[in-house]
Length: 320
Image (tube, rainbow, N blue to C red):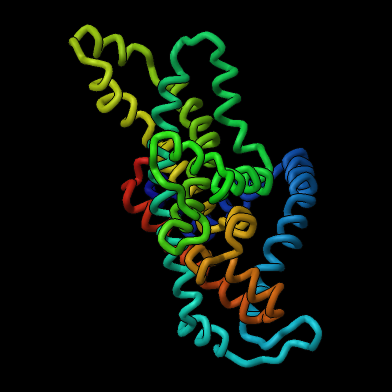
């Protein structure tokens, strides 16, 4: 009787049970030998790109931040001066002018070129004869050397024999020294940026238009929507992710403008076309103030970062 009423065997203690299950499950969570080989192979394939990125991108970025706090002129060893370069840049009226010119150039070239690119992309997305030829013609300035383009526009803007003044003379409008006047030089340079930047934006928009469902346009046609209504209610909303991408890369490209300024105006007249990148070039390779140029580059980087964040907030996540 006593044996039949004996207490049932006690379960193992919770801690011991957990330890035993952990030991049992642990081998199952470990990657297999094949997975480890695949992981090593992946790291080996990534290694060349990572080394290239580290040597040509990460290392120069770190060196820029370090040299920005030194007095360095290439010929002598860097001398640590703390934040003096940043204070100089902050109080430099020429760099202020260059920053303002860059902002004006950006807010003139980016929206205008994007608007024109959308219209051209929609037009060239239709079934047209010689469609590929039209696309190639609009994209050609994008793949042409900027220096060559600037030389052509230098002839167009020539005050004596330029194409623009000759065309204006036909309709009785007097010519103008477009690149030699502080009132028109920046706008003349901006026009070159607008013209050259249309091709890439157009190509991106055409690629985005290929993914728009034709059923949306068919349904809108059944409802009696006009072509303009389809453009505003279907085309533009469906292009929002592409628009965000184009907007960001266009801002970055506009803030890095250099070639056409160097060829067309050399930053003049009276610094009216001096851009941030051109001022960095002038500090580094004309005045040999490498530390100051690095500090200006840091300001440029910070400006680009702020503009990218602002553009992302403006789109409110529509890029997804």
